[in-house]
Image (cartoon, helix red, strand yellow):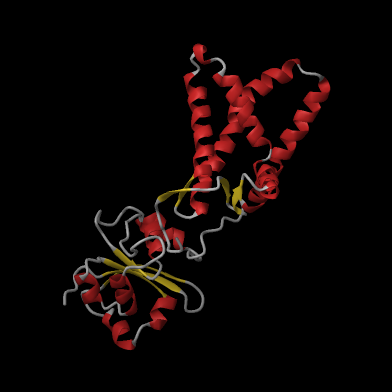
Length: 272
């Protein structure tokens, strides 16, 4: 259970609602039950109301909302009685069910509010404002950030310019050796086999990154090496000089102030 990416179903007893913040919350513990109700908020009540509204009219054959209600109920109940891997993995089922309750409840609440007393309308408007407040805060921050686009942490200065010129332009089966394999995937649009899973790098990739001799890199099936100054400074002088060989071709390079650079080398012509 403590290993990464453990996958497997098992029964959960006593029944409990998994929470990403508090772990499994037992339905038989009054204190934990209160926390669970606070976590789900009005979404749980709305799911009950949505089930009553849509499923009572089964003969009317509202197949789509009825299927969504049934799926939401199953998604909510299944994690209570079954575990899958780590508890945090299965909280997505609960979250999806609770989110769907808002979408399913919106139509009949809207129809009810048309004829409801003005006080209920004001109360509903206040609740709606509270529900979207977090989104408005995020939108305001995003609007401020629009004039100054920010790339991910492993992209610096003008690297998106390389993507503009070379994304999906290299050979279809080309492999690029990069100290940050995600970076080359993002910039050049080519898959990488640098990882065994989400958390572990492949041993062969680790060996190549430690000693990226062009001939050995080419023998391992890589056609290109995307080099940055941090990786370059870690390499021994013998490996650095190997990149001056005639078989190594500098495809693209970016230089900025100081010693920062990015270089894309072609090593396909190098052989052991």
